[in-house]
Length: 387
Ligand SMILES: *Cc1c(COP(=O)(O)O)cnc(C)c1O
Image (cartoon, rainbow, N blue to C red; front, side, top):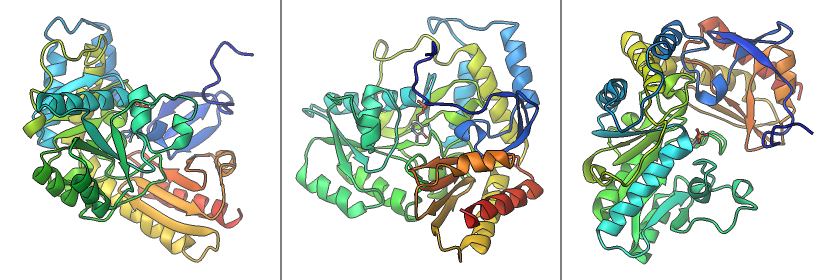
């Protein structure tokens, strides 16, 4: 019995320190971190300018209520809109909460139009969070199991299937939005067809639906653009992000433009901590770093290097079903459950993740060196070949 609820199962490793792409455990063992706190520490651990911004802000003003102006919040909203082409921002403390804001916008948008029971199209195999609304939106029965009754107002379509969405448009008149990940992360790193988002954008325009993108994992430079939709030359109406936004300080954001702006009015939504000076100072330091250096272009280049390297070394391997990737999201699907590879990698000084039971997922930091990329390719290929 421990005093912690057992929501994460047994945890083998105690990390006490990090610097750049490396972390160290209690015994002083060093690890190359190829998962970045699940796509959070994109600029690496203990990034000097982020740490400095946090220390400065903590010594000045940790928190004030959203009853007052918060200049750091305004500045981070400005920077996010500049990077993304979006118009307005609401700050939360997590990804799930950012999606809650998006779902409330969809509901309000529908109700304002007089639509009874506004419904959001969500995808099979998706992941949107662990709150009641976001687990209801999630397309994974393991996440939902035991938590009925689920929140109503969702209808599901297969991922990367535009025809299925068109069919729903023909048979339902209460749809108000689509919520979709540009790449499914938790679901196993599934990359849709190149023009998938463009086609969804077209349908949303025709039907007056909101296109809502969950970029909690894909955002903040990881795919080689600040947001993944920027590869498609479109704008969503709503986009959510979190994970990498403040390199480890807890923050989430819901951004709107077009038909989704001003849907939420005073009194409709709020958060005690959301957008507080500390988290926003960390976020601002991240945005400044992304502005001053070529991390985002580097992510694209590193992603190609890793993908090509894995194809070269693993395409012939009989247990490899598929190797997928988009920027610094890499998935290697095997023909059997491979959770035990996490421990085997750890013994080699490498932190990786397995998702959807049989898919090795890599989310390395954007500051990975060429040598570290090669180490990743070599070590993981060796693990897979002897598996
Ligand atoms: C991680 C994640 C979430 C949930 O974010 P939390 O901060 O854990 O609430 C939602 N959607 C996607 C795509 C994610 O990767």
